[in-house]
Length: 551
Image (cartoon, rainbow, N blue to C red; front, side, top):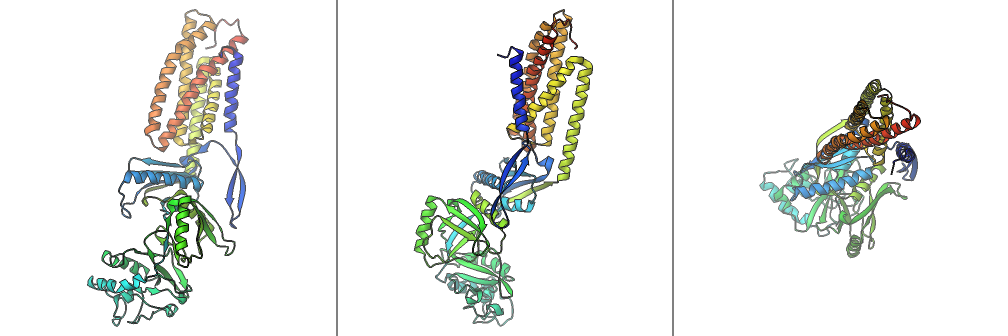
């Protein structure tokens, strides 16, 4: 098919043009949300051949399931689910060519090249993002359970903090200073009832908190929050709550007057709907308050269930929970709600709203993840790696060129030309498949340079043997390529098989080495067998009376 020089040159020209096309820098349009919440387009110039973590710096994280927070019944399944969720999150995060892969049966490795905000990346990776909607309790279940909690705490030897005149352990827990429960803090004196003791400052919400009498909402001074939380989590105390009721804290403190407080909510343990039914989430600024919000959309099944449940609870308060914490003050349900809703993020930034939206959209982690290994590669180290890698490649290639030309003379020049074509083909192939160039990848390219030269050496030596036996230049060239073919194919196929094993069972850097080595071997076979022979054919066509080769 490619027996003529014309057909060979056409094919080589197509391959060269294709390689240049994939290597040519091009403009890309990025849609970004500005500080005012308006989407804007930014045009950036990108080189198709991307640099990896070790060449441009970034972050390396190793994560495992956090069994201390939640025990997994099926760790292997949960790790696979976590891997899927993390890949979706990282894709939404916008990092180019991230590496997210499972290593062994218990670990996930995440590599983010060129990351500029490591703390934000860690927060997105570790956030569980489990979304729930629950109705606040209107039966005063917590107040009714407090006497039993008080007796339990006293039986455990836990006493009230404060003056000896305080008779109730539970009153101190939730925040009173007398048997009748008058709150110590002046900002809470208008509250309707103190319902705490040993628990340390819990007060039922009222107009003093700016929220009216919200059913199931209680207030704890922020200074008492850690102690109250620890006491409520004592198993014997937690068992005093009626069935069907759970206690959940607000996501952060709120200022009431001059004192920061934390809200505690008694909620129905049954969720109206969860984030499993969520299909989309977006962040934007509320046009009325100009504050950040995260809007969400549920699937058809979730929307139908959400509509039915909210229709039954018109006039009730609905808490929105993320990872077990109530987000903002629970809104009152004014009417039946369909598939769309929003989460108001008071006191948060638009960036935090965007991060929340992307984690909700990617889904919740089945089990919390903990970071067991963290490394950051600085940009300076990446630049140094690039400099040394390029220097080693250039020095090695220059030595090879000098040796080939000095030993094989004009035939060596043809080999050098085919070596330049090999470089172009290899880099073009890497760009075409969207590969990321790493330091091991550079090593793979340098190694395949040696394979390219080795192929040419085999061909040239066979041609020399044929010339020594008195064969013509044309016949010596044909026989040299034909006899060297078996050795070239055998050695390169064995090398490709080895690289395939490295790719299948290796991790990130090893995979990068394997990919560049495989592509380099393929490019070296094309250039040494096809391109070099075409150059010899052109040489012989221009000098048909040649009686010997410069080899």
